[in-house]
Image (cartoon, rainbow, N blue to C red; front, side):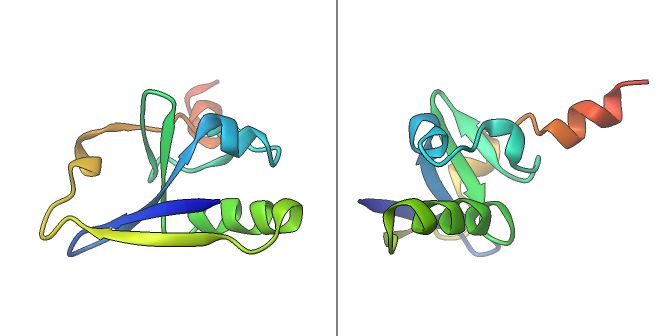
Length: 94
């Protein structure tokens, strides 16, 4: 399976469907609020969340393949909704 890695001048995100994340035991709640979502797609930030997914995918399915798309100075991914991480929900609870 080939995944798409989007990047702009400042950051990058790995595009993963909710179903693909679920296939390795991960949900939106397993990622930080630095990742984004649109519909059933998650855009996992490159520093932590993408690595979490890649490690889980490779343990289950083997080596991950990617191709990259350069969005120039500003990616439209930055304008998407943040994922709702469990950590953020815990911080809001009293």
